[in-house]
Each structure stands twice: as structure tokens, then as C-alpha cells.
Length: 346
Ligand code: PBG
Image 1 (cartoon, rainbow, N blue to C red):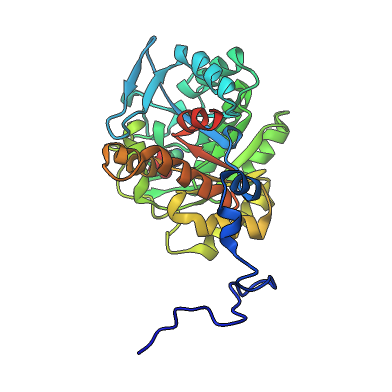
Image 2 (cartoon, rainbow, N blue to C red):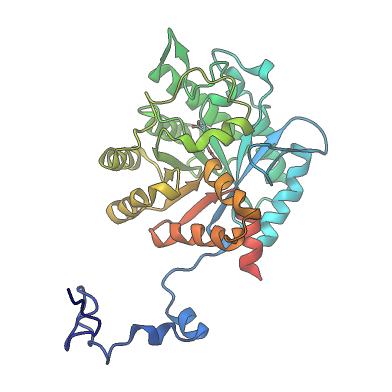
């Protein structure tokens, strides 16, 4: 059988437009010089696209490297002003705080979550005092404070919804009064966005933004993070009764629609890379500020090629981040934020 190797006359390269046909249309023309490629580039990645997640811990002037996330450490609060200054000088607009809570502070009722002097709230104040222009985002979920390691309160083996929402509201109120600019509910309980929005209004915190982890899937890619915040050994079972089944895209759209209706300002898709279809659909359908979380497992995978003979870690990392922008995201939570920003600023 013969295969045709020459383009037939009038061959249309692409089915969705009415551009000239070959040879008048030679798409490689626009790729032929670096300056031309820059001129016609559709998507730009910049330091202003990043939210930088930071792990915080008790102690003084130290950092503890996280074994499951090479290159990433937990930092003591007194080091945060310097890190915030670094974010500012790199052009990264926001930092997101994740606390490593002492096991002795974890309880069934998770009350450390709304202690105004817990690690997160101290971290918020430390950053806002030192570099007020940097936005501080928080995580709202009970897992760092829960003996059971779950995002919600556990009763008789069930993650109870409404009682958890009450706890999350107290947690959010404490973060807002500590000075958080953006609160990020990552717990996937029903009704929490509306409850948090009502609380913010009542407390005079109407300018605090909600970035809702609306499309958060029950993912295997969170494992290194749970190690980083010390939740691995605590976690009893899995999170499948609240996080989304990763087979479900329509359900993710329903969760986003609901959270916007309840008062979310921005929405998140999490994890990121295996979920670019969800990012694309979300932006196309809702046209609200849309973020992706390139989670710990994705970080660990990309980072692990650093000694690879064939894959360039740095280039692969930038490619992975730009892909989120192309898919429609306005920004990305990524552990690569400072490294990527430095490269992009060169
Ligand atoms: C907790 C939370 C998780 C992450 C962010 N907030 C873990 C989980 O849901 O088990 C994961 C982040 C990452 O993997 O980088 N609610």
C-alpha cells in the first residue's frame, strides 16, 4: 500500500480556520526566529502568577528539610520576614501558610485550629508586620490539628459535616483577625463557603478573599505534603467521603458553581497537572479567577529528575507551570515559586 507523502493541492492544514493553504501558509515561518516566537507567544508565565506555599514550625532560627520533598523545608516563624522579603523582591504576590503542629496539640475537637496564637496565626502576623504588601493566604481544614488526621471532626468513624463547618468558621475568624488576606478552605465540607462568607461579613472582614479549593480530588499526589505537615501517621483511613472522586469532571463543575454562589472570590483545582482538563473547563464555564495547586507529589516527581541524564529539571518545571496558564489558570500554587521566579526574572 502506498502512503501519500506529498501534500495534495489545496490541502487545508487546520480544520478550524480559513487560512491559506500550503505553500502560501507555512506555519513554520512564525517559528523560524526566537524574536518571532516571542512576538506571537500566546501565554506568558510570570512571577506574579505564583502563590508560594511555606511550611512553618515551632522553634528558633531554623529550618528542617522535609525528606519527602527534597529542596523544601519547614521554617520557624522568625525566618518568615526574610522569606516574605524574598517573595517581594522576586515579584511573588502571595505566600500560603501550612503549619507543622506538635502532636501533643492535636485533639479530637481540633481546638488548636482557632487558637489566636497558633502557628498559622503567628505566621500571618509575622509576615504582615514585616512585609505588609505580601498577601498571606491560609489553609482552612482541621487536619493539622486533628488526632485523626482528617480535615473534619470524626465521630463514630464518620466525618461530621455541620459540626466541622462550625469549627472551620472559628478557624477562619481567627485567621482573618490575625490579618490573613485570603482564606483557602481545602476541607471539602458542604456549606462551608457560605458559612465563612457570612462570618467575614459579620466580623467586619468583608475584604478578606475566599479562594475555595472547590475542585479538590481525593488524590494520591498529596502524600509528601502529609509528611511535611506531620499528618501521615495520624490519618485514619482515606478522605474519599469528602474529597472528589478523581473520575468526576461534571461533579467538579457543580462544586465550583456552588462555591461561587456561596461567595467564593476565586476557585482552585487540585491537584494540578493530571487535572488540566478540569482547569480548562472551569475557566471556560465560569470565567472567575482560577488557580491550580501543583501539589507535593507533582513537585517531588519533577524535582526527582534533577539528576536525570536526559530530562532537564529546570526546563521541565517551567513547562509544567506554563501549561497551567495555557489551560486557563490565572495563577498557580507551587513549591517551585521562588526558583521559577528567579529564572523568569533573568
Ligand atoms: C489539607 C491539605 C492537603 C493539601 C493542602 N491542604 C492534604 C490533604 O488534603 O490531604 C495538599 C497539598 C500538597 O500535596 O501539596 N487539607
